[in-house]
Image 1 (spheres, helix red, strand yellow):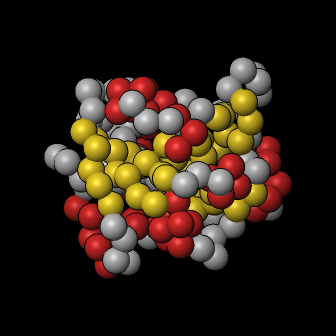
Image 2: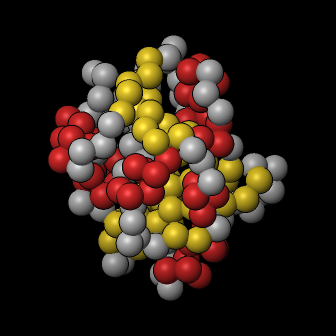
Image 3: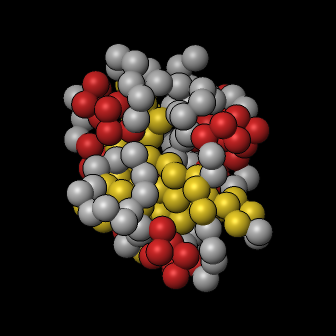
Amino acid sequence: MAIATTLKSFLDEHHVHYDVVEHAHSHSSLESAHQASVPGHQVAKAVVLEDSKGIVVSVLPSTKRLNLEEVNGSLGRKLKLVPEGELSTLFGDCDLGAVPALGNAYGLDVVWDDELRRATDIYIEAGDHEHLIHTDGEDFRRLVEGMPHSFISAEKEQSNWMGR
């Protein structure tokens, strides 16, 4: 699979120009960046969270870790990480662990990191472990316009953060 059908339909419906970047099999968004020879800070990864109010897809650069406390504070929620095994019910046309960073394509709420405001190009998982979707940063921000955003990430070496 080169691109998840739900994601492709969403991008096409919103008239977003994109390229599909093929790379060697990877196990994380940061590894995808390395395999595809693209800057890690331009690869937007998804971390899926849930609470009693529902699911939220948090989106941040692959070089960072999620600050769950900041997400919860920003949204006024008590979100926790969704176990990876449960993601197939939410993202049925994606390989396990290859969640696209456009959760709104799947009808889910999104919160995104303000670090992505500066990226001129954005790459996201295409729904498998061998492809990335490349789009202009402005197009990405247009797709998440109106969705909550804040600085929800931190450097990877800080131990009280989540994410791969």
